[in-house]
Image (cartoon, rainbow, N blue to C red):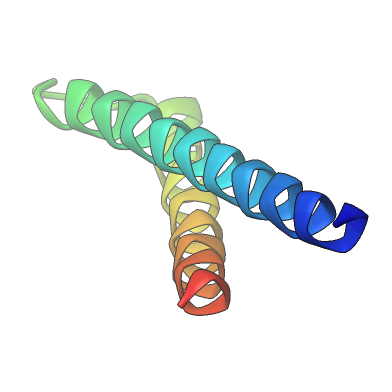
Length: 71
């Protein structure tokens, strides 16, 4: 019975992590969109956009891995 409880707790923490990563992915996307609405980006903002896109891609990979692991 403890094995079953551990499995369900693992599934919950996986689902929690998935929700957390998806929320972070959305927040990065919102920041990218906010910067994209500007007419001009400073060099620092251009670097920020590039970094945000890289982070977003890593999170997308993690989301995919979490979804594949829960299937």
